[in-house]
Each structure stands twice: as C-alpha cells, then as structure tokens.
Length: 117
Length: 239
Image 1 (cartoon, rainbow over the protein chains, first blue to last red):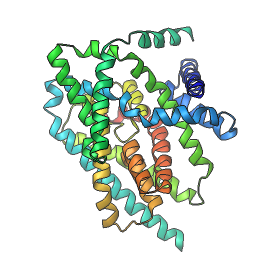
Image 2: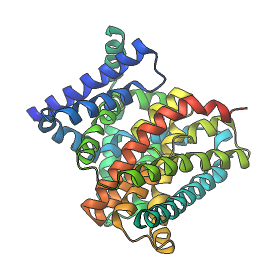
Image 3: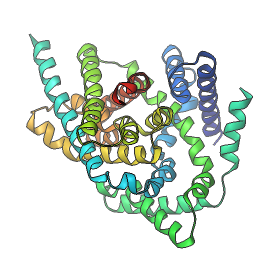
C-alpha cells in the first residue's frame, strides 16, 4: 500500500513537471506526455526509482479501461450530427487499421530480406 | 504552478456518487469479460458503457453531472499516461540488435496508420470535427486523449474510435500475418502495438512475453511520435 502511494506520488510529480514545462516553454505537446518523456529519460539514466514505480504503474495500466469508462460513455451523447456519420467512421477505422497492418507486414518482410543480404 | 494544482484539485474534489455507477458497471463488465474467456467483442468498455448509459436514462442523470462526478478517475488518466514510461523504459533497456529496421517500420507504420485514416475521412467527406477526433485513433488512449483535447476534437468520439481500432486490430491481425507469411512473433508484436495500441499489446502478451515486449515498444514510441507530430501537422488537413 505504501509502495502504491509513493509510486503514485512520483507519477504525479512528473505529471506536474510536464505541465509546468509546457507552460514555461510553450511547447505544443500535452503536459502529461512531457511528464512521461521526462520520466522515461530519468529511468533510462538511473534505475533507482524503478522499484517504487513498478506496482503503481502495472496496476494503473491493468485497470486503465476503468479510467476510460466515463469518457467513453460520453459517446452515447454525441448527438445526431456525429451519429449520422457513424457508418463511415466505422469504415474509416476498420479499413485504415487493416491497411496499416498489411502495409507494416509487407514493409517488415522487405526490410528483413534486405537485411539478410 | 499553483494554478495547475488548483485545477487538478478541482477535478478530484468534484468526485461524488456517480463514481459508484461507474464502478458497478465496470465490475459487471469485468466479470462478464473474464467469464467469457476474454472474448474481444466483450471488452469491458463494450459492456460497461451501454449499461451505464441506460441506467442514466432511467435515473435521469445528465452527462455533465455524471462526468464531473467521476473526477478521480478522470484525474488518474494523467498519472496513467506518465506510468507508460515504466514498461517502455524496461523494453528500451534491452533494445534489440534489429534497431534500424525496427525504427523504420515503426516510423512508417505509425505514419501510415494515421495518414490512411485522415485520407479516408476526407474521401468519405466527413466533417472536420470528426477528422480532429479520429486523428489519434491508433495511439494508446491516455496519450490520444490529451492530443485530441489539444487539437480540439471530441474526446468521447476519440475514446470510442480508439476502442474500435484496437478491437478491429486484434480481429484482423491473424489473417494479415497469415496472408503476408509474417511468422516472427517479435514483428507481429510490433505491428499489434503500433496499429492496435493497448488492446493489441494485451493480445500480444497472450502470445508470448517477447511478442508483448515488442508491442509495448511499438505502442510507446508510436504514441510519443504521433503526439509530437499531430499538433504540428493537423492544420494541413483542415481546409
């Protein structure tokens, strides 16, 4: 429990650092993403924080679907203008995902073949 | 700095009873999902959200009140985004010898996933707000959410789009790998991570830890790159 709390505190501090960094530099990325990149840099340089973060991060990621319940429920309230476009939206999502996987598979096959030579 | 703290405290302190509605809906969904042997189409979000929606209709609760009542969950999305650094750093540490093809596949694959979606949106003549909302659909949800918030899309639409993308990704991936004769599970993992984010990564871990590790790399690096590139380039698509 103590580890969970300390891990959360570290994550929050990095999130604040990210938000603060954005407000100071005016960078055009989300603050929490900058926080994640900062933590990534710190963890690559030094493993000391890692044992404190492992429990919290794995639990947060395991139950991440729970955090998305409120915002996803909002989809039922999007209104007729969006609902009318729903069939095309579905098509866009499915086709582009299929194409992207197919493209990546062919690309990887090609990269591996040229790597073998 | 104090402004940021005050804003976050406001989100947390608005938490109230609608949180119970979310927890109950999620508990039912989680139980059903596990009972079904984790069937893709019974993903917890697919079950929990309609359940909650219908309950809201019955008890006459509007979305704004429901959403702010779940303040603590919405607030946790921030730390959850930062938490993605942990598995990513563990995978980067043992970054393989195939670094160069990996980066090329990641860069071009991530670009293709986003670009193809944006072009299809244009092709189907969908509105600009849909375009802004779908732009980050291949990116892992916590990152995608903050990006779409920033570029001015509808976060609820993005949340659903991300879920559908992930589910579509794990449903079609098997046939794609078979069709292209891509048998190496490391590369399969990378593709799942880049195109189907966290849902794809979870699927990859079911194949093997190695497959999952590559999915984690693909999801994490694609998330960072897309989040940096999108706000800078999305203007090109809004004419």
